[in-house]
Length: 384
Image (cartoon, rainbow, N blue to C red; front, side):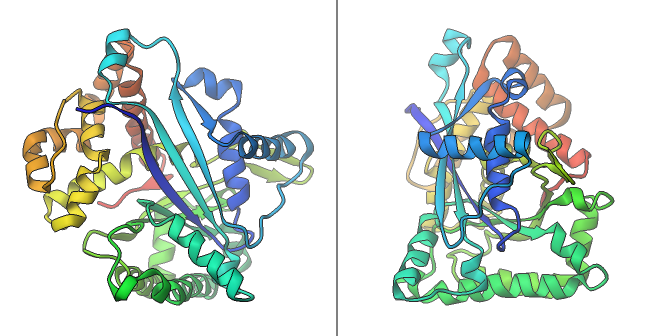
């Protein structure tokens, strides 16, 4: 297999103004710079843009040391690139054989105001289209449901949820003509839309099952309408998960005169989700033959699937032009094992990788363990 320096995964984060996107991003990066985080993990999270990294770290320290919230970036769409670089000390043979050296996470932060208020003129309309085009390569989108807004609408949550999903649906519809060339659906578009409860610390009695049930009870029709709009944008729309995965997120615990940045929920899942959920889902869709033609070829052969199989199981493979050929070269059973390895077998793989100082395999298997643990803790619920 041809060696790649970095495996790049994109994630798009959508949320209304005030839903916690800036705090979430700052807490994600700032926490990764803490001594405990560095000691417990086999990698460093490094901002590819030094200035962006400093600003995010400063935001985090402002919350931690001065009880100061970051300024909101109104009508400003920004992409942030983070490299997950393995620490020194890995076994030389493992380093030589690993299929990629680093995982790169590109985080697209899309302004909620553009879904709530529209745009002020042609120039801003063009900026909105350009910003949305930048995130089209994302496999995962997080759609934030604001825990504070749910509290404010206690007993009538459907009013808030209907407004939220209607705004997102209409915002996407307003972009449709500008995104589709000659009306043709897009092959590249976020296909996994996770419903995420932000500020979940404000609702301590709500686990991820209760969150899912709330959306089903109060907003299932609105989520279905949102899915139909997204399906209208995407080629091969059977390979689409909207409102099938759920998670809880809390960037910190906020109290009068105090912000406890160490009390986070769900933020440690961002890297595992970005790295592994698209891989697992694309394999499933391919096996169900929901990825026909060039769409399947693009998703399955562009590098993520064969590289991830090789990294998780040490299986070497060649790249090929047709999805069926790739799956046969990789061996469908091997692909399935890599995507679905779990439980004791997963932990044995992780222990073996640690013993052999294969830091890439140890990190990825630990990511899968983290997702399993989050499901056990009722923080994360993945599509069955």
